[in-house]
Length: 340
Image 1 (cartoon, rainbow, N blue to C red):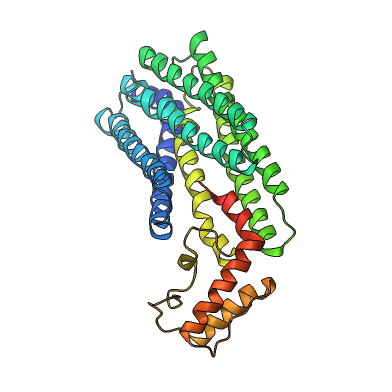
Image 2: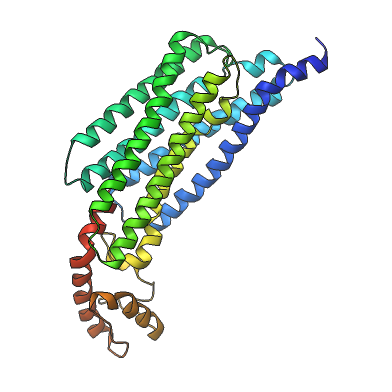
């Protein structure tokens, strides 16, 4: 076979794979930044939340290593070999199975948040978890059948088509339900106060954006698989699905950093959201007039102010009253929204 013929045959497979690999690595670098922000900003989160975040990161790190190995197998070790180009390698594991696991983790995370926001209603979270389980099962079956097929261009059997439909279709339906019900329950928690309203509006926007992104990606992957049977175009989207889910979940958690700039005590430790020089209690250090004035301005709408001329002991007393008023007006809403 001539070199021109090999190049022509390789483009429909090599192109999507190359695009998928490149975007995958870009999203992994984004995920590393998200993890660093989470580590620096939320050391006081519950152990189960930190285990969830770091567990997802470890899974994504392993997936990236396997994806890098596949990239070298295709474009380095097997360069110019069509058999190596279309071989399954670790795609059967890194794409459907690991994507299903990360998506399931993210969707259960959102289901719990909906459970908290809906005053412990179990119906909607149960539906979301059931669909997520169905989607994950479809991903596992897809991975097993793909491993048996051994070729990324030969995934056209009836069983594989059904499995992929359950995997991507279920994930899209689940993401859409999450976006709808998170928006609904967040809207119901609007207390009418300005700061909680801004918090809720921000959370609604983040939820809709991330939910829409993952749902669209799953649908596009499914459409490409149906539209180009026997092709490999779908791999460009399939390779980035796990990274999209992981980034979306951790981005929602990290959004608390910006929310706390205007929304008061959103974490268990109120002092963690204040400037580093303002520390109430026996360990009080230098408190600048500007910082106290900024704090007074941020709390004036709740009927409590700090006097910049007061001593640290008096500031400590004022801070207790301020925290109590903040918790009365917006603490309950904020803590229920951000509990994880």
